[in-house]
Length: 96
Image (cartoon, rainbow, N blue to C red):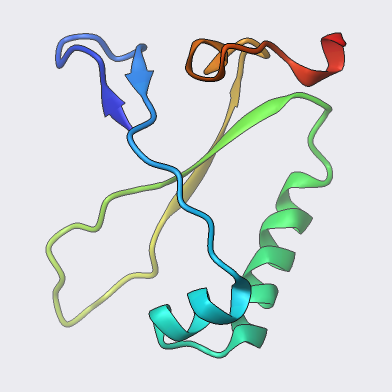
C-alpha cells in the first residue's frame, strides 16, 4: 500500500499482491507450515465476531528493533464496501 499523495491520509494504491502455495511461503519465511495455519486460525477467530462487511488487515511497520522486541502489531479497519473498486474495475461482489 502507498498513499496516492503524501498529504492525503485517505487515498491509497495497492502496489503489489502476491500469491504463494502454503508450503512455499512457509519455506520462504523459514517457519513450519503448521505455524502458518495457526496464525490464520487466530486471525479468523478475531474476525468471526465482526459484522458482515469489508475489512483491511494492516500490519504496522516494524520500528527500530531493540533487545526488548515486541511482536508485530496488527490492526483491523472496517472500510467502505466500494473501497479498492477502482483497482479491479469491480464493485462489491455481493452486488451481482
